[in-house]
Image (cartoon, rainbow, N blue to C red; front, side):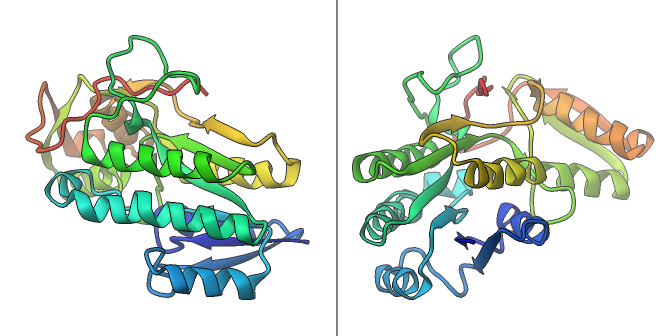
Length: 258
């Protein structure tokens, strides 16, 4: 039986892994939320790994507030870069395979076709820069790792995400302004979870992966899709806009080639 530590267990992806984990009797999962395992606490991480005898660590813990990362980049780098470097070092010391979740925001969005794992990253906001630095820290430290870039992650049942935001607005009724000139691929946490667990079970080759289960679309088109799925289209008026009032610059096209 393989033993897997999941950090950031209270986030939408960590929560989803908990829901699905009972279907896999061949894996023993240990879930740690930020309340019980602060990944910026190097001593705590080290002690957890030494006592745990883990085979894998799925690092779902991250600083994901894109707007706040512009205001306090040092916090984003502490979680997304420095803490990830510590985890990589401790994984190496304890012979643990690291599975790390990264983002489409490592790209600048200037490409006109989906980004492959061979494309050179060029992040344009502090969040993306901090996540890329985390990737580089892993690659400079480990050989047995999986870096999984994903995009527009959402869980229909839990957490704060675009899907639940639009759903909540539709239930309340009214109108909503959504940008129609930023393109990506929505990704279900349930499908990403299955991919991560299959990666462990199938012993996939180490390295960098892109994963999404959604089709390329704009945020406006994604909102339309949500309203169609929930039959709430009559409750919410969607308005196309070209620009969202944002401190952070976001890539206009961050579709991943999976």
